[in-house]
Length: 136
Image 1: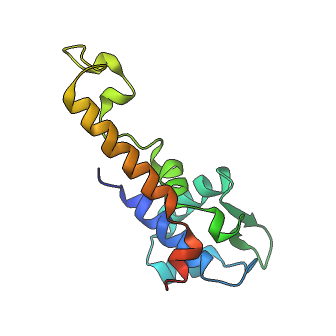
Image 2: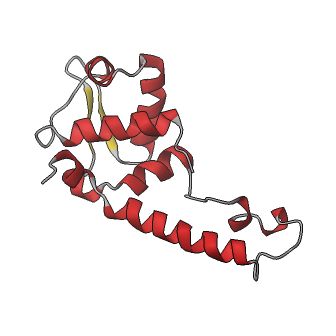
């Protein structure tokens, strides 16, 4: 599985906001400049993160963005699911008709990939932005 560019940028944005003092508001221009994200792309990413409740949008002259939750409450999995949808390493997990042999229930590859997917989801959920912003 390979994350798309928007997900990579979203990781950077959330990590940057997590590294700031709680409640600090940062302009979109400052985020785009610091994280080297094209402004139009950043605006699209921020809309998704705001809609999902991970980021707050603040209007006005001193407006910008801040985290909507404590960094420890936001995991890599949260960001991946916002930007890419549910983690799924093979289409047969969401569409059993995709398997031309109709083996979804007893295919050895399906079963192996199911374990790999479970591990990936667990690991993405285990890593939160408080830990990532303040490595030990």
